[in-house]
Length: 347
Image 1 (cartoon, rainbow, N blue to C red):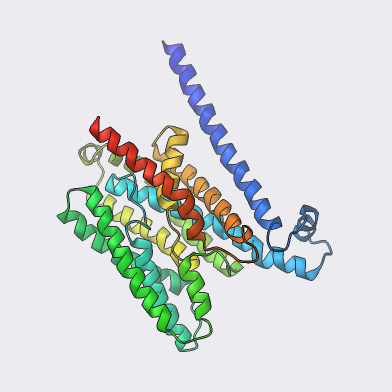
Image 2: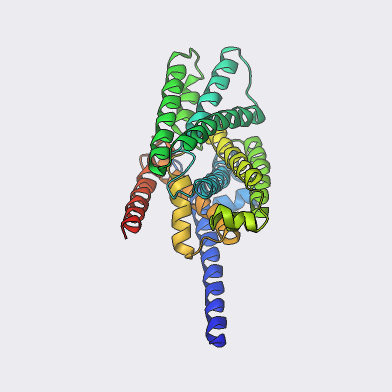
């Protein structure tokens, strides 16, 4: 019996290692494709020349180093942030279809960022990365506050999700109104951002999002044990010495920071925060936070890299919004999760 237990533990460990390696390899492969493929195709040999500092055409160098490289890195970082935010919200609400987009948190962040951008554009000012993140965080917290107030009144989680969707629609309607009546040539960029896109990302943006996302992810990883205890119920977590009030505040703050960072730089990106944590959970056959946190980050990066690649190459040179592609992949996952949850409740 002991031998079987050891073998089973070893097999699980090897499975986890294989899945992490698989996600890393897939990410690197998609990253390479994102650098090489686009409206202008660049051979891998030319990419190597640029990366090693060898002589090459200035146009090719600018395409790779100033446009595609930061864009691909942003897709990985922000995709991972979105998946982690969704994982925290699903843990917080004990609901598999909770996510920053569905609960209206992304739309709240989008509203305040749009207001800030329109104000600065109208006054010929420049919006800094930190100001965008602060604006998005304020909007995310505002939307989350409404969701938490509603959650106290409603016992059914399905109604909570519907309420979150309604909050999202209200915020999106106000944002569209603001965008429509903002008179400036730069409003085209604001409109593209409001649809969700990784285009226009600079190295300065990458530096800021790297610091914010990885610092937040590190803090989330430190909460692995409390998250694991909380997943087994509030009573169990209390018995394990978890301060439930403080813990729930931390979950809200950390998930809002991640969601705000994504919205500030890429606009609202739908379904990644819901679908990726569910896919990773089914792939690893575990909900252990110490595995789910890094796996969700990798899964989110892979998902957004793939969707961004499709968005800018499928109808090139015309580019689709990132949310259009993520919705096509993410919506079926959400529908499947809802059907499965319904069957489990009936059984």
